[in-house]
Length: 101
Image (cartoon, rainbow, N blue to C red):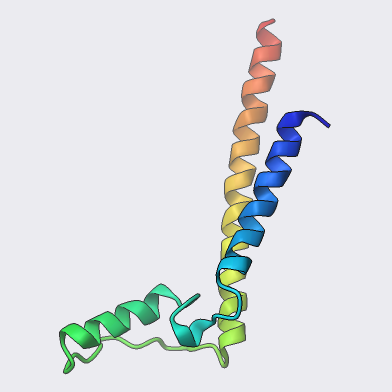
């Protein structure tokens, strides 16, 4: 294993562990790990307490865990699509380079 890979693994571990240490014991009730929707709603009610939303969702997930699951699936699907296209174009470029040689 080269130093480059070792450095990447250590950086990945630091990125994963640092938030767990920094926010240990703090949760959504203390204002951490909340979503942007909740923060925006709170900010809007501070600016205009009489504001009423003009639109409501036709379906809401039955629990916060299912909402988080759907969000994670959406993020994973997006990462797969982006990774596929990056890999596809990298492979295409590599193939073109090997054909030109």
